[in-house]
Image (cartoon, rainbow, N blue to C red; front, side, top):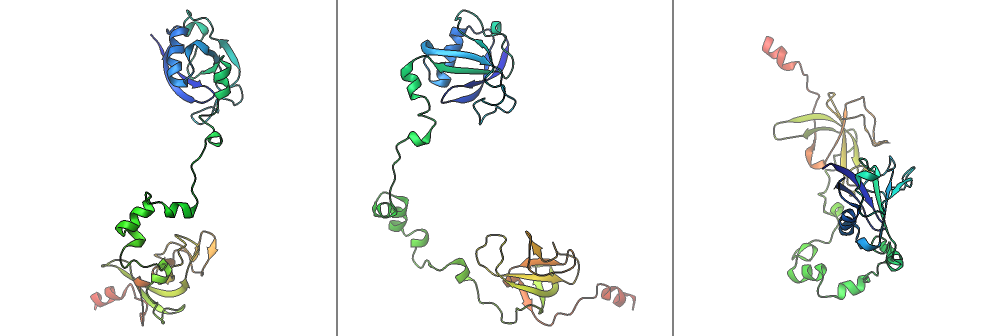
Length: 253
């Protein structure tokens, strides 16, 4: 027994199936009924050459997909006897006019009657997620929950946090770096939530860019000298540049 992979296509289905080539056409139709929903008595099965661009998302209607190689209409013959090959398409249709009239109803959402509610109707119902959250005081209905936006909840900025100010940025409990503030304000990258970012020009080439993000320039530095950080990581003050060779000189003395 040899197994081959076929695309099985019908008005409402398209799938990949492994089938034995020694199946008789009558046996094949019995299996295809379970896949397509078309009764085996009314099936018309065609063996087609599959287009190169056919796949899980298509119906095999690309170039060459409708080239019919054989009509499988002799129930006692085997699939192999029709010259079936790997990745060919088995196109299944119905000879029953009533079934044909229903074709597409299960795959076309526009033909499905939808249950829809207006916002007011939804809010008035007692059996919704919204009603459950209100009853149990969850999320925005919790006691003490704030209705202010994320931007409004942001801590007040240090008045000294302005462009040109010297600063030290805490990147971790063990690591901090110094630089100069070059930008303060909301940005068009990230979550776009209106929160403030601080653009820093580093004293050393430890940054990720030059002050431009996603095609928008916020300030300009040499390459690898710019980064954006949150204001709570920035301390403004008299932070002179650190001489990287200072410790070596002290050790030599």
